[in-house]
Length: 461
Image (cartoon, rainbow, N blue to C red; front, top):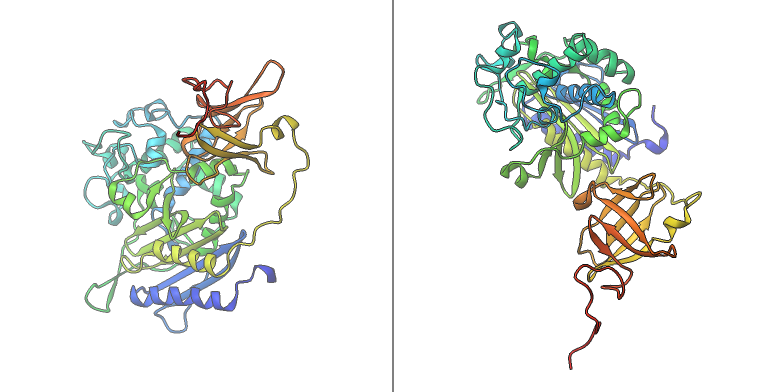
C-alpha cells in the first residue's frame, strides 16, 4: 500500500491508462497489463483486455521471454562477486568442451562473443528443448558469426552457455539456483519456469484479419536460461526496484550499477537509435533520458521492463500476442509520462557531517592548460571535476584509502587523480592520468609539460 505522498495524480493515472489502451487497441492484443514503480513502490497497475468482464491483474502470469536473460546475468554476477570466477575468464576455464571456450564470460553477458543469434533449425522457440539435449545441439557445427569481442551481435545460444555455466559451478539446475538465490530472497513468488495459474494463454493474431490462433508453449530445455520464465507485473515491478537499487541478499548496488553500464560497442543502427547493452540489460536513450531494462518475446507473448534510475521510475508491460504493440516502447512511454508529469522531488540538501581538511584544501578552480574546471566535494565523499565553461571532460571520482581518487565515468573512468605536494606540504598541482592541473592557467613555477614561456602572458602591440 502506498502512502498519499506516493500516489499519482489523477491526470497522470489517466494518461497511463490512455497509453496502454491505445497500445492494446492499435496493437490488437488479446490482453495487456502494466505496472509503474516510483520510489521503490508500485504506484499504478493497469490492464486492457478483449474479453468482457475479465481483467488480468498484477498476479496473472505471462511469459517474459528474454527478460529471463537479466535473471541469468544476475546469477553470473553473483558468482563473480563471490570470487568463483572473473568476467575476463574464458568460458573454457569453467565449462570446458563447448567448442566456444575462447569467449569470455563478459563477452557472453554483453553479446559480444561473436556467436550466432539463434540455435540451428528447427526454430527453438516453437519446438521442444528435447530436440537440443546437449550444448553442441544448441551451438551447432559453426557457432561463430563474428570474431569475439569485435561487435555487438545478440546471441540466444550465448545465454544458454551462461545457464550451463551456472549449473556447472553451482552443481544444480539453473532454475533451482535461480529460485534459491534470486526469486525467493526478492519475494518473486509468481515467477517460474513453467506456467502457474492464473496465467494468460499465448495467441497469434492474424496480420490481415481480426482472428487468432493459440501458440504452443514449449519447454526450452538447454535454452531455458535465455527465455524460459513466466512472471507477473507484480513480480517484475519488484525486480525493477532491485535492478535500480540492489539488494545485498542478491547483488550489491555497485554490481547492479555495473550491469546498467554500457559494455558492448553499438552497431551503427543502434547508435543512431540511441540504444546499447550492458551486462544482461538493454540501454535506451529517449528524450534526454537514459533507461535500462530488457524486452522479451516468445511465440504468443511480448514483454518490456524499463527503468529510469535517475528519476526512480520504472514500468513493466506484458501482453499475450506474438506480434502487436512494442512492449518496450510502451514501457518507455509510461516512464516518460510519470517523469514529465510528476518529476522527482530531490532530497533536501544537507551539509557533510565531517570533512578532511586535506580534501577541503583541494576544492575550487583548477586549470588544465587554458581550460578552467571546478573541483567539488559532495556529501557522499566523491569529488567531481566540472568544466566551468561547459567545454571539457568532466568526471566523478571515488576516494581511495591512500589519498588518491579513481575516476568513475567518462574519459577519466579508471584513471587516478592525486594531489602533488611541495616539500613544505602545500599543494603544487593535481595529476590526472599525466595531465597537470594548476590553480592558474600555465602557472609559473608549476611542472607544466613543455615548460612555460618565461615572458608570461602578453597582449599584442
